[in-house]
Image (cartoon, rainbow, N blue to C red; front, side, top):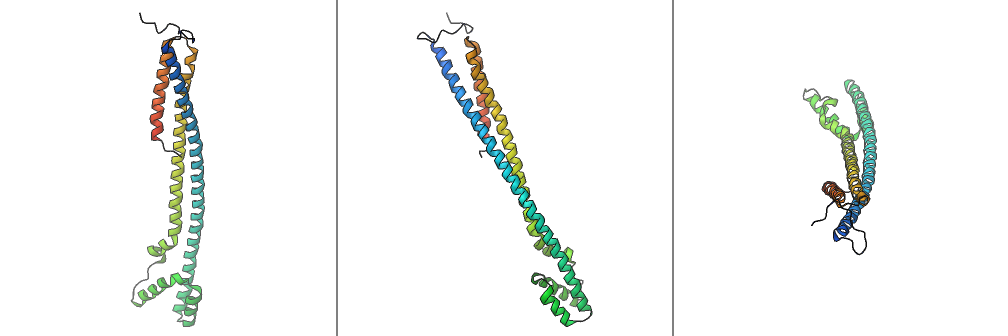
Length: 219
């Protein structure tokens, strides 16, 4: 006649039932796995929080540099516009010495090709290209700030992803803690059926947690 699952287990002496020892071994294994999983998840939470902080700091640094680069670009545009205005006055008064002085002393060397292009357009009876509509000119000046903005955005996205991964590991910690709880309270019951149910619950929780763990990145 089979033993009832509600029957108390024999004492742990020499006459202890093999099934009782198996339950104890399985319980210890589940406790070990749940403990290691919880510790690993907590470690990963700490690591990903650090990654999130570092990426956020990097993003902020890039944004500061982008602001500086943009300010320098706008100042350069204003300087070039002022130089063109002075040069235009010298051209209108046919003052060759002043034109040469402005070209050699005031105008930026990298702006001279644009100035020469304008003079060629004027000589051909064309209207010179508006400075603020010259995309190549604007890209040259605003390109560095735009690149830094893109890097800042990328770092910000990485920071957000790191924070989300840290949250995932926090949820995973709860799964391992639940498995640890189910396995830990088996000793509170003397009958076999509650222990088996708790072991099954702990095992199922660990399987789910393990599947989640495999899909998460490691910091």
